[in-house]
Length: 415
Ligand code: HEC
Ligand code: HEC
Ligand code: HEC
Ligand code: HEC
Ligand code: HEC
Ligand code: HEC
Ligand code: HEC
Figure 1 (tube, rainbow, N blue to C red):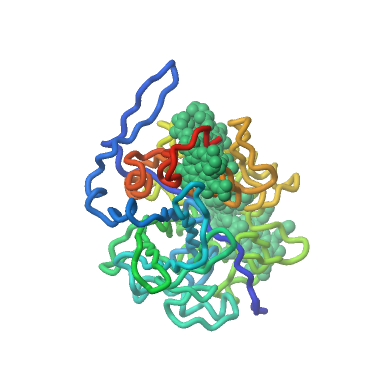
Figure 2 (cartoon, rainbow, N blue to C red; figure 1 turned 90 degrees about the vertical axis):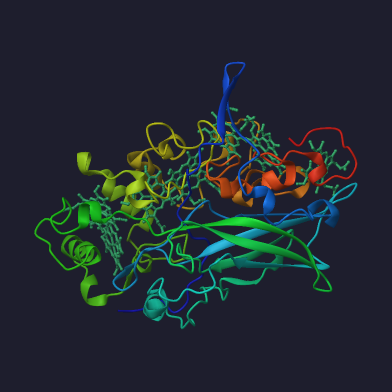
C-alpha cells in the first residue's frame, strides 16, 4: 500500500482526564451556588520540588496542550493515534510590572520515573510502515524524547510530540505521567522547578463490541480485535486493509490531529467514526468506550458542572451526544479545530475564533497557564494536576493570587 512519506503532526490527542482523589474535595454551597473546594493540604505536595519559587524572581507554569492524549494500545495491525504529547510552559519574571520571558533562561523537561520506552509499546517497530519515517526507539515524531530542552516559541516554551506512554519504568500503568520541568539561568544554574501532568492513555474499548462473538463481529473471527475491525471494514467498504497491515486510519480518513489530508471523498476519521457509531441504536457506544475511559476518566475537572456528573463523564454537556457530534461534522464543523468555547456558557469570556488552548488573556498569559489543560481545569479531581496552583498560591484554584507574578500590590482584576 502507498505509505505517507511526510506527516505533519499538528496536534494530537484525544482527551482528557479524571478522577482519582476525592477525599480532599469539599462541596460548599454559597448563595445557592455549589462550589467545589479542594483543600490545600494534599499529602506530599509540600515536600516536593518548589520552595525556591519565592526567592527565584520567576514563576514557571506548565501544562499539556490537551487534557488527554489517546494512543493506540498496539500498532502491529492498525494505528489510530501515535504517542505524541505536547508540553507548554510560560515563564514570568516577577516584577512591577511582571514580564513574560523566553530569553536569558533555559527550560528542560524530563518524565519522572520514565526514562525508557523499551518493552512498553511496539510503535517503533511499525513507525516506518505507518508514518514513512525511520525513528530511533524513544524518539517521537518531531524529534523529541522523554527528556530534553524545551524550545522558545514567542511567548512560551514548548516540547512537541513527546513520545510518552502510560507505563513508568517499573511497568506500572498510569495515564497521568509527570514531567519535572526545570528552569535554569544562562550559567546553567537551576532557578526553579515545577511538575506538570503528562496525560496519556491507551484505554480504548473497541473489544467490547468488536471482539470475536461481539455484536460488531457477526461472522467474523480473526485472532485479534484489530483483525476483526479491519475485516469488517473490508467487508463493508470494499477495502483490502487486512492485506495492508499495519494500517494508519488517517491515511484515507483525514485527521486534523495528525495533519493528514486523507483521500478525496472519504469522510474525516472523526466523521466516519462518530457518524457510523451514532447509527447503531441500542448498540451505540458511549464516549468512554473509545475515549479514555472508565478507568482513566480523562474528564477530571472538579469544577461542578464542568467535570463528570453522577451519571457519567458528562461529555455531552459541552460536545453534544454522538448524533449531535455527527450532525455538526456533517454540517461542516472542522474536527479538532472547531471545539466548544468557554463563551458558550460564560458569556463574557470569549476566546473569539481561537481554540481555548491557543488563547491568551490577562497580560498575555495563556488561559491554560491560569486554568490548566482542557478537561483538567483547576481545581482537578486528580491531585497531581493541582500541584502547581497549590505550590504557587496554596490552593487548587485558577491562578488568581496577584503576587504569583506582581511584586507590587496591583489593583484591578484579572478578568
Ligand atoms: C458499543 C459497541 C461498539 C464499540 C465500543 C465500538 N464499536 Fe465499532 N461498531 C459497532 C457496531 C455494532 C458496528 C456495525 C457492525 C456491522 O455493521 O455489522 C461497528 C462498526 C465499526 C466499523 C465499520 C464501519 C463501516 O461500516 O465501515 C469500524 C471500522 C469500527 N466499528 C471501528 C471501531 C473502533 C476502532 C472502535 C474502538 C475505538 C469501535 N469501533 C468501538 C459497535 C461498536
Ligand atoms: C485505504 C483507505 C482506508 C483506510 C486505511 C481506512 N479506511 Fe475507513 N473507509 C474507507 C472508505 C473508502 C470508506 C467508505 C467511505 C464511504 O462510503 O463514503 C470507509 C469507511 C469507514 C467507516 C464508515 C463510515 C460510514 O459513515 O459508514 C468507518 C467507521 C471507517 N472507515 C473507519 C476506519 C478506521 C477506524 C480505520 C483504521 C483502522 C480506517 N477506516 C482505515 C477507506 C479507508
Ligand atoms: C467508536 C469510537 C468513538 C466514540 C464512541 C466516540 N469517539 Fe470521539 N473520537 C474517536 C476517534 C477515533 C477520534 C479521532 C479522530 C481523528 O483522529 O481525527 C475522536 C475524536 C473526537 C474529538 C475530536 C475531533 C472532533 O470532531 O472535534 C472529539 C471532540 C470527540 N471525539 C468527542 C467525542 C464525544 C463527546 C463522544 C461521545 C458523545 C465521542 N467522541 C465518542 C472515536 C470515538
Ligand atoms: C465543560 C465542557 C467540556 C466537557 C464536559 C468536555 N469537553 Fe471536550 N472540550 C471542551 C473544550 C472547551 C474543548 C476545546 C479545548 C481547546 O480549545 O483547546 C474540548 C476539546 C475536546 C477534544 C479535542 C482535543 C482537546 O483536548 O482539545 C476532545 C477529543 C474532547 N474535547 C473530548 C471530550 C470527551 C470525550 C469528553 C467527556 C469525557 C469531553 N470532551 C468533555 C469542553 C468540554
Ligand atoms: C457547558 C457549559 C460550560 C462551558 C462550555 C464552560 N463552563 Fe465553566 N462553568 C460552567 C458552570 C455551570 C459553572 C459553575 C457555575 C459558575 O460558577 O458559573 C462553571 C464554573 C467555572 C469556573 C469556576 C468559577 C468559580 O468561581 O468557581 C471556572 C474557572 C470556569 N468555569 C472556567 C471555564 C473555562 C476556562 C471554560 C472554557 C475552556 C469553561 N469554563 C467552559 C459551565 C461551563
Ligand atoms: C492570570 C490568570 C488568568 C488568566 C490568564 C485567565 N484567567 Fe480566567 N480566571 C482566573 C481566575 C483567578 C478566575 C476566578 C476563578 C474562580 O473564581 O475560581 C477566573 C475565572 C474564569 C472563568 C469563570 C468565570 C465565572 O463564571 O466565575 C472563566 C470562564 C474564565 N476565567 C475564562 C478564561 C479564559 C477564556 C481565559 C483566556 C482568554 C482566561 N480565563 C485567562 C485567572 C485567569
Ligand atoms: C500569572 C501571572 C499573573 C498573575 C497571577 C496576575 N498578573 Fe497582572 N499581569 C501579568 C502580566 C504578565 C502583565 C503584563 C505586564 C505588562 O507587560 O504590562 C500583567 C499586567 C497587569 C496590570 C496592568 C499593568 C500594571 O502592572 O499596571 C494590572 C493592573 C494587573 N496585571 C493586575 C493584576 C491583579 C490585580 C492581579 C491579581 C488579582 C494580577 N494582575 C495577577 C501577570 C499576572
